[in-house]
Length: 420
Image (cartoon, rainbow, N blue to C red; front, side, top):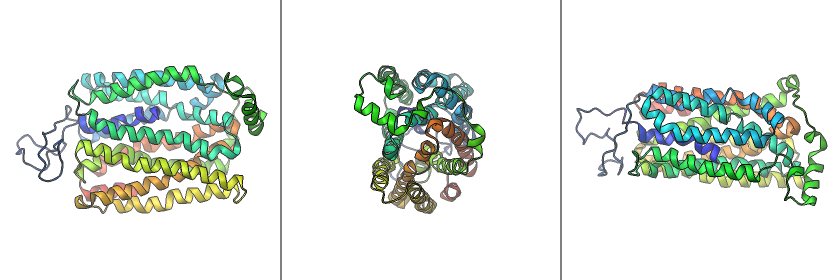
């Protein structure tokens, strides 16, 4: 949850931070290209909103993508660090760094835009270890016939983080304190600081280290997972990982999924502003609607996947492939159709976006859980390799969006959605 909040807070904040790229000081205030907080629809009467910074599309693309320049570097080291020092310590230290970086973001932005870029790279470096740690933990904690639901539930935290960020950030932008938008970083950074305390007090690397777990549950988990997973050592059979067809299938699926997800996360708020003309407050709320649906679908899909395996109705490999097909084929059609929506069809566009994101939720019980199933002991290492490739869309996608949508027209955004 908090990992994703600290990752995408800037995606909504930047809408508030930057002045309208198409506005001109010589134009009348009645010009439709000048955005208003009260309403972006024709005839709106709210107070005129002017961003604090004058960053062009290319600079915004650099800022949004800079996080991933750091994020891609620490994926593979993150898997090794989790095996060497334990996921609890590695994850915890990474999030402490994130707290500091998030709280310093407003200061960095106001001093110099490139300070902010450097800070976002540092945040990416620290967050790069988080998901390898997560898969390393699930390899130790998740019984085989409960993995779909557990991993889906874990990933659902990212959905909740997205919903909270998109819903709340628009309101925080309008708080009359410190310029409004800095409150996004102060509130989320403060919440993460509280979480860090709870993490170090409540988290344990393995079931046998947990002081409050029952003996029955501990024995059940460790027996079903297997002793091999708990053996100490940092050796990872990298050659076997890199020559495994299953690992490559996971990596490609993960990369395709991330291209769509990162495009939606970093660019949809701007799309809703430029094409659909939603106001900043409504922008955040409606951007969050698809993720609320995604949360329900993600948990439900994981539950059904486990039931199908537990009752031996379908083999595990069949469930994974079916769920992955559902995740990709309908979502591709829906996001392509979004490009044809007009301002008058804005609610249909939101519906298509909701269907797109809801379908991708099936992937949580497809490629995502497969990373742990291929080799539970090396789940973190496999994820680190897959996520290294899958992180590339994080910094490429914002740059592509910026290059393809210089004027923010519907026709330009069509190209963005067709690529997805």
